[in-house]
Length: 170
Image (tube, rainbow, N blue to C red; front, side, top):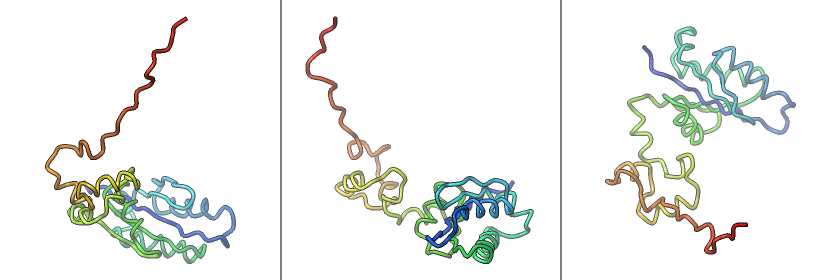
């Protein structure tokens, strides 16, 4: 069985595009695969696993087809990233230049993730990134190489007491 392939499409909609263009782009994506998940206001995940065989193309070829159609029919430049799961496809799309395509094969996942900054991980904001940097963890590879089973004190949040005075009961 073929490995799963998720295409993250980011449609670069400008202010000059008429209302409803995003919905039309989703319909266009459904012409390639019926497995489309909208990510408003300007992106979508396409599960192209089955579409690869149907279209007799590789993942890069399907991305090129989508990019060509969105540009030719609607004047919308599209960035595509293809990976084995939605999280990786979204992360790759975030660093892919507009109008380009990035493909991450299963065997490339570790090599691609290791140099990415910790802020590329979903849920790691500025405060957590600052805390991780104090422990010398700047990249995803640094976190992966950490010998402990979990980040422990680096990410532990202190729980505040609810109240120092017990509430009188009636």
